Length: 279
Image (cartoon, rainbow, N blue to C red; front, side):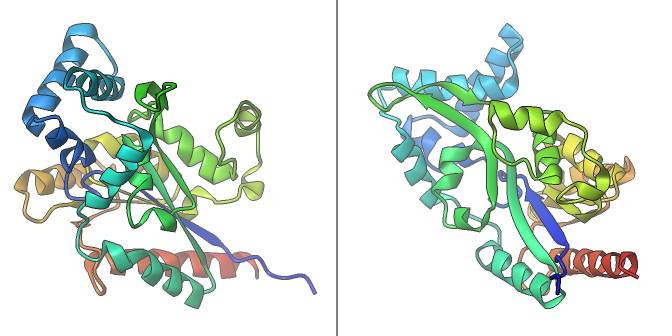
């Protein structure tokens, strides 16, 4: 007897200010340089303005340049270790197991992905990295001494959208062969994770291209905000008014939170739709 395939729900997260409370560089990397976050970002943003440089490439370049200028040895292992100092919003540590268990109870397979403009090596070192099927984020190239040398992968705000199509089609690895496969026509019925089964969770304007892409294709986009930050709430509210997201909620991942309720309701809807399609 042929086994019935479970529907897949893909939860895709930004990282900075979505799962963790601030930009990841501010926990350890910037203090190690002897700088304040304001000083670091002022230099990075200044490079964008003066050179017309992509903002993500600018901050990555400044990480390389400042580590050399301040004679701070930064290796892959150094960045991995910085992941241990990341502070997460309430409930993040237990969120993934809880949502997985709920999905399983409803006959739905839940997968988690990171789609971030942050640093992959730092995310890889966090306690939650093990929960993600794939982490898409910026990466560095390292020289023969193992020191950061140059940006290898830069994930800016619009480049994030390619990874949603990778998840959609099940073409997860980034290779020359996979790029050809990704760009080939694939009928909707044969795509691994339909957009209608996607949930994108982000914190603001930098996530708009992904939020809009998911929403207009039948999925659900959720803007989260730090409840202690009035600016964050204002930004999230504007996203709803501009019809770019389906929901806004505090970045509270605790059991019985509004965010958990929203995600469970979406999983329930996927289950119902899947059942109707099988009739």
